[in-house]
Length: 346
Ligand SMILES: [Cu+2]
Image (cartoon, rainbow, N blue to C red; front, side, top):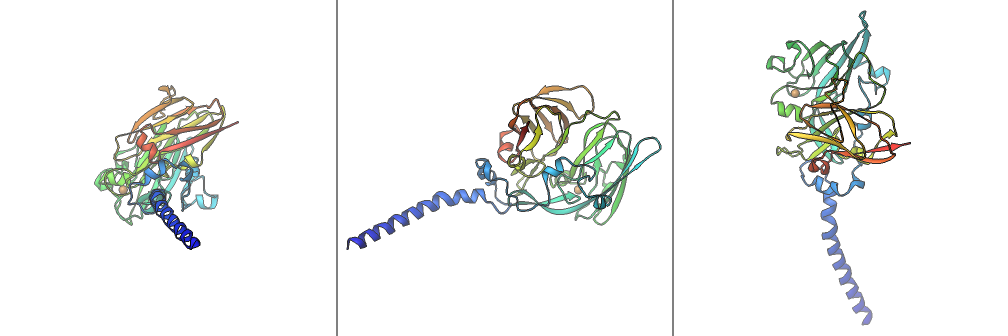
């Protein structure tokens, strides 16, 4: 009899514990493991759980590789020649030819969160194009996507190379060749200029365009960063913010730099739906060269703000080893993915 009472009491305790456990645990689990792009609770779950944000289920885009690549130099030679060719010219400049295509592509912007993007060469941001001032750039553009697209470059070029007016729109299945001289030296961008422009940019059709000055810059650990964001539920607001597409990616995998080495960041802002973005670096200050067009530093600071389409070149040396955050100083953006880390090593 006593044994039966004990058994019943034990059963009741176990049941109560299970019920409490369910309500305590399950809602948190749902926040941390969103599997579709319709939930706007994603960031709420992520912000407080820095240790669990690195498990991307696809490996088709690597922000570490993107950050340090240009002119398809991340590819083996046999594959690279399908997208890039350089030819020395008699005037000591270089002809640089690129094969760029647009495509509809599902991309993973946070672990398990997918976004129906439009992408150049299967990636967001598109491949970085880099030349020296005075070089000739030729872009063989093919539109393999479902909407009319273009490639519009910042910098000097003739009007018919601007890729912005409706006669310039390249229909699906068609192609166009852009040709111009790389001018002026600096940190620029390229992006689709088809309409509605807001859609074509926020869907992911943009990339970095770097023009090095004729007298090359001091060697540095160079990092390419495009601040971007994704409206995953199409409500006109962004649910995910990042540098180089993947939320919290560099927080989980800190960017390694050496103590005292020169670090140079080429950064641009392509965030839609928010008028301004920023980058703030902990434990250090940097020289800012706005648009990278002049040799004199425009500011010595630890934060800059950039409107959409703006970009900058930042140079710094870390005096101490250790881990240092860098992130948007708009706290909401930081909580929703635009939070990253440097690891300074001896
Ligand atoms: Cu477009």
